[in-house]
Image: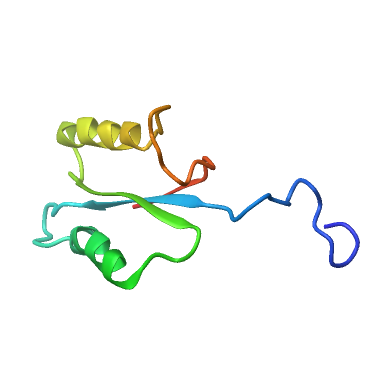
Amino acid sequence: MGSEGTVPASEASDGPSCVTVHVTGFKKFHGVSENPTETIVCNLQEYMNKNGMPKGLVLGSCHVLETAGQGAVAPLYQTLQSAIPSSEDSNPCDSGKVIWVS
């Protein structure tokens, strides 16, 4: 930081910063009949619609994935690919800042 009370130009912005959050949970696995992350992810979109998102955050996606094995590879790849914005996307949050929560 520069002199007291100033923000370097590299940290200044023209407007509010926006971050897209992608959340993944996982299905049950050997020895666990119910994975709590699956419950959280399945209810998160409805919860955020009801209670609102914090300013500057956009919920990009909520996906439940297999926990292991070859069955997990293709859905994981598709989930990652779906988070890459295309030129046709009209997402108000085009800053490129992304958070993945698993």
